[in-house]
Amino acid sequence: MKIAIIGYGQMGKLLESLAPANDIEVVAIIDPKLNNEISAETISEADVCIDFTIPSTAVDNAEKIAKLGKNLVIGTTGWLSELPKIREIATENKVGIIYGSNFSVGMNTFFHIVENAAKLANSLDEYDLFGYELHHNKKQDSPSGTAKTLTDIVLKNINRKEQAQFDKLDRKIQENEFHFASIRSGNIPGTHVIGFDSTADTIELKHTARNREGFAIGALKAANWINNKQGIYDFKNIFFEMLMAK
Image (cartoon, rainbow, N blue to C red; front, top):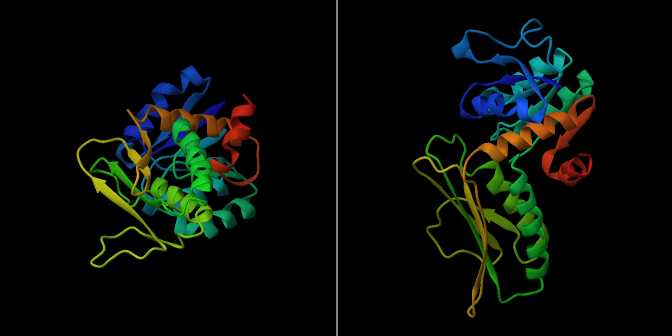
């Protein structure tokens, strides 16, 4: 399979280096620093494009790529408020688009672990819940898309938690609120923790990314999966189907 990489930052460079080992050929790299842009000419040979750019350009990039009839993996986060627009783009242009708050194979496994733990904790009223994340200081969204996904999982499965709080609180937190904190510093690739706390003990589920390789491998697997498909898909929802297909 052939891909075009949109965005040549750390993730773009990692995709380029890992593609050959995953039987994928990189036929185009698009980035303003390379003095090129998305066009019929630059991505003509690609089967699928992978976007790791910035939130403010993700939707515009998706529209340009879809109008050229190419399927797309959106690895960029921080744009989910525009999801209805992305759905419209995929439908109108009859292309396949796959997006996700996190393409790491390990993190998507973690999502399912947290979901099962939350279902158990739903019957244990003595446990309160909390979450926090650590990321590098160049990350452009806070909370991260991953933090929002983990929070959605908690709210969906814990009946006593009805709303999220991502900001600092200058008051006592309410019993129906789930507090998720974000820290940005240094070069941390990403750490996410979901905790369950009672007077007797604390249970913590933790995922730590040692580097960005897991994200890149997941995005390459997603590109293989979306090739020749139509429609829009959340990577989290097709994760196990993708694993079974290999």
